[in-house]
Every structure is written in structure tokens, then in C-alpha cells.
Length: 183
Length: 376
Image 1 (cartoon, rainbow over the protein chains, first blue to last red):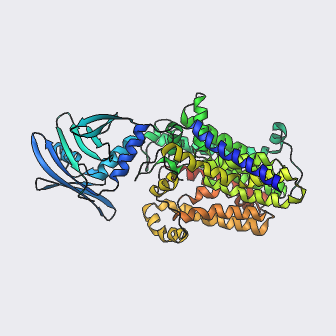
Image 2 (image 1 turned 60 degrees about the vertical axis):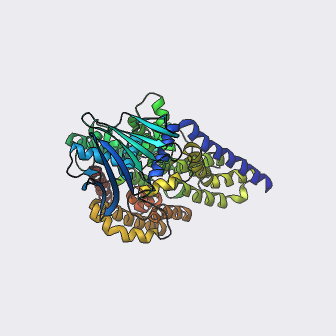
Image 3 (image 1 turned 45 degrees about the vertical axis):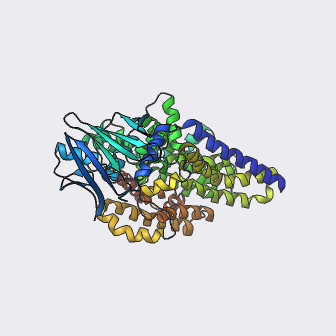
């Protein structure tokens, strides 16, 4: 009986170890930067809105993004200068270059998450470059190639985006983001 | 019923399998011809132009994309999005291995899937002969070769590899090669979670022969029975090591709209009207679930299929319902092997048999044509 159990235990140990080992040897592991970006996505998933201060096209705006569900549709509204820029299911309504820039820089959590997740899943190369901003330490997320002319900067402590830079050909701007108030 | 061990040699195998291999080749020709037709038609349905950039590209559609993604990049759980830890590792590992030998990923996947399926039909015939009368074993293997959802066995999907591992594991156990059975059972569960159920026929075989086993062999038999559950643990342990999240599989499943709960079958039934409203062609999965269940019952009532196989087949059919949906039941049910013996249990005249088999090929062709519109 004991011999049977011993043989079974040793065999099972070998099978379990081989099962783990074959995966460890054969499959690629994500890079540290990819895992960092996953942390940012995780941090963003706790929020349903954002506030931002935008410097865009030589003007300064305050924006408020709120996300909600309509039956069957995901909606994100950005209130900017008394207007609303609306995105429905990843489509921006009444799209103009300026409103697209306003929406991108407003830092709506779901839109940011969708974009960054898509970059991850399509295998874009990802780098985190440390920069100093006063006493805080930020990481610039460098994506190559990227599908949006947007550069996010995340707080090293929380992984949350705190700043965005827009580098479109005809429109440049930056924003400072706050996620704390709108959960 | 355990018959004498069957010797394996290529010549002998081919001599006894001509009819089965003929239907296997015929069904694969139909499958590839209709994939080629879809390629010629060009982008239709839900699949974008990327799926039509090469004649083989459609073989990598739907879940195939994700298996190839794992082969290329490994695992990464993307919170709140569909991501690849929902897909088990062995098939992508094999694809990556063949890719390292110089083949592009998709042709490597198609080669593995189709090669494995050729082995499957022969091995399934062998298994049937060990358990059931020759006639049922032979006709069952032909039905496996021509089953309408069997186009999946030609795509970048792991079902053909899993089916082969299950059958070969049980054949090894029937021959008393318990270490082989244990290894194959471990590999099976790393291919798809349904591999877990190979433990049931293995346990039945070990129980029946327990008095003839010495202590060492008993230990190996016990290991074979437990190999699948133990190897299953290797996947979350790997995910913990690789991406820091042992629960990544179940989290990823949730992003695919599947969460395993006790009330899953009730949710699955309640979900049917919404499912059909959004994707009417998924009625196919409901119909196939009913057909598989009926054929499983036929195997139970009309053949000497061991109860352990019926139980394993039933669990393979029912378990996905606990995730709350009937989606893909047509594909999952392909692995409920007694279904083919159930189909073979109905004696038919030669003419009716030919008509039935031809109808299966017609349905196979039609099923291929649904690929742009609905996932298998």
C-alpha cells in the first residue's frame, strides 16, 4: 500500500513539475514593461470618470469626463467649456480635430484603457521611461508603433495616468489628470 | 470488456483503416475546398479583410487567433478585456515548437491539428475495437471523421490534439502502460480543461483490473487517474510565475462572458432568447447539444459502451453550461466520444448508410460556410 502511494506520489510530482516546466521553457513571458502597463490598466479599471486641466491649441480648459451605460451602449461624455463631446462605443460623435483632441486629453478611463489594452494585445513594443516632475516620479509610457498620437505619463506609485501629451500633426496639447473625485 | 492488446504497426494500421481513412480524406477535402471557396468569395460576415489575406488565413479565425497569440507572445491578462489566459497552453506550445523548426505559425497550427486528427480517427477505431463490436467501432470512427462540426479539427484549434491524447491515454491504460497513460492524461488537461474527464475511464479500467496489479503498478495506475487534476494545477502555477496571477484563467473567462457558477445551466437557458436574437446561427449549438445528448443516450441504451465513458461524455456536454451559455456546445461536444458510438448503434441499410454519410459531408460543407458569421 505504502509502496503504491509512494510510486503514485513520485509520478504525480514529476508530471506536475513537467507540466509547469514545459510551459516555462516553451512560452514567452511578458516583459516588465508589459506587466507595468497591466498595472496601469488595473488602476484605471476602478474609475468611471476623470477631471482634467487641458492646454490645447493655445487655450486652457477644465474638463469633466463621466462614463455610463445606455442600454447596449457604452457612453463617455466630456464636459468642456459648456459643451459636451460624446463617445458612444468607441465612436466619437460630431468628430472634429479639436473635439477629438479634447476627448483624448480628458483621459476618460475606459477610453484610455481600451486604447492601451489594444496596444498591448497587438504586440506594440512598450517602454517605461522615468522622468522627474518636481518631487514626484513619473514614468512616460513609450509605445511603438502607436495608434493614437498620445503619450501617457503615469505616477510610479499608483500606476495611474497623471498627465497626457497630444502630439498630432496639427494639434498639440497637454493635460493634467485627476481620477480621485469621480469613481 | 477488455480484449487482448492490439499491436501497432503502420502497415497493419493502414490495412485495417482504409475505409475510415477514405472518409477522413474525403471530409478534409470537403473542408479545405469550402475554406478555399470562402477565400475566393472574400470578406463577408463578421470577419475582416485580415482573415482573407492568404488562402490559409481563415483556418486561424476566431479562437485560433488567440491560440496563435499565445504561441507568439505567451500569456498576458489584460484587465477588463478579452485576453489569452482563457486558452490552455499545450496547443500553442506545439505550434511554437513547430514554428521554431521554420514553419510560420498558422501553417504550423493547421499541420498539427490535421495531423493529430488523422491519428485520432485511427486511434479511436482501435479504442472502439477494444470496447465494442467491430462494426460499431468502425462506423463510429467514420462518423468521427465526417462529423459536421469537424471542420474545427482542421483549424488552429486544440480539439484534435486533445481528442488524440484522451484516446491514446486510455489505450495505453488498456495495455497496462500506466506511465504512458499518466503522461498522456497530463498533457490532455494542459490542452483543454475537458481533458480532466479522461480520469473517469482510467479509474474504471484500473478498478476493473485492480486485483491483477502489483503494488508498483497500482501506484502508477493511481498516478494515471490523478495525473489530469495534478497537471491542471500546473497551469495556474505557471500563470502565477509568469504574469503574477494564478486566477488569470477564470478572470479571462469572465471577460469572454463565461463565469462558472452552480446556476450556470439555468442562466444558459435564460440567456437563449438574447443569444439567438444577437446571433441566430448559434441555434446550431442548441440543436447540436440536443443531438449529442440523444446520441449519448443511444450509446448508453443500445451499445455496451462502458458507463465510465457515458459519464465522461455527459460531463463534457454539461460542464460548459455551468459557464452560463450554450455557445460553442457544438464544438465542445465533439469530445464526448460515446456520441459517435451512439450514432453507429443505428443499423442502416448500405444505401441509408451512404446517404447518411453523404449528408454529414453536406452539413460539414454548410458548417464551414457559416464561419464568417458565427464562431465554432
